[in-house]
Length: 461
Image 1 (tube, rainbow, N blue to C red):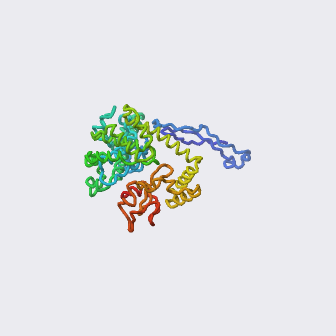
Image 2: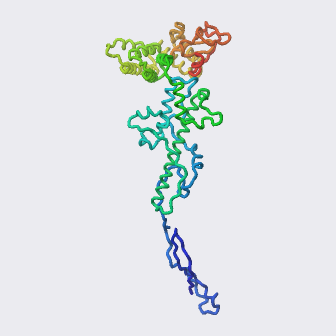
Image 3: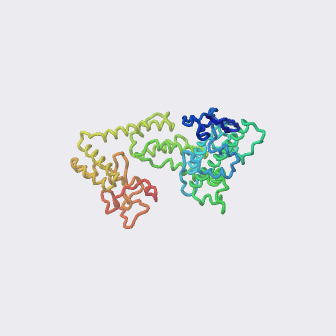
């Protein structure tokens, strides 16, 4: 026996009245019924199951990043903005080069380059992302002078989502939601980039040079990155005569043979570009003359310099100069590597190679270890002493030359370093009991340290 019962099945806004068949045990109706012992049938549904509910509006397939859920279109702006600092963006220079002391036109050159690179790296809808968010930071006049650039306009705050009118169809409603989400996303990204750039500026410049821009209550909260950048450049970015002179001096700074030659070329280009921007361009012949002096002081390009001087007068460009010394540097390094790879047939040459190799190995452990290793190696190689291996040990205060051709100078207080102007006789910061007569051959109880580059940069060491 079967009893039909009614049940309503709902899906979306549709409802279907469905009949359901439920089995009834005949014994519960009439215990005396002759079929009381028959098997009970399984329940049977007269209506098939509905597999996919019907939606009234099409789904948005690709919601914008960080957009509020479509189910919550009325999310307040305050709730959205509270998450702006949680977004991680990839900047080429997340930490700008720190400016030590008062900013100058020279130090602000790198500062500006790194800051502009960061702003341009973050995509923007403006100008089809040709310049990223550069217009958010860069002054209007130079920005609009860029190829195919149009005036930058900050993305305005879109406000809270406006309720959709009751008579709006589903497609239009979905587009309204998507447009609002897109505007929110662009606005939030702009706020995040501005916040990040402002933090970079504050971290790169010492606080006292930004104090005028800091509010006693709000700090820098009311300042944009563009305002801070404009203040720094206006106050400290003007090129002064002293900056031009320091720039040229930097071009003449020493270069060490253990550095790539490209480091010197990079420095030369930076100095040349700065001088040109300051309307004090350095003529190419002057650049060549200054660079040739730098290479001569390194002590490893004497023959290369002679070859350059023998060239015709047509070789007068910096590019030709660099190409010539790049070739000569490759030859120098090839010969150096060949000497280090094996010994000569000359006993004294073998001794020199052995000693310089031992010195190079000991150099990483400290001067004492290097000197001990060098002396032991020299004695083992037919009794050649240190002065035989390192000529000029006393002449012109050059106390040693490493296997890479690097000259070292000894100071009784500070030890061995590469600054030729820093010896026991010329030390600007002598310690107690300092002996000006001390040399590497006769340290007179002085320091046995090797100066690191960071230490040499402090106090003339």
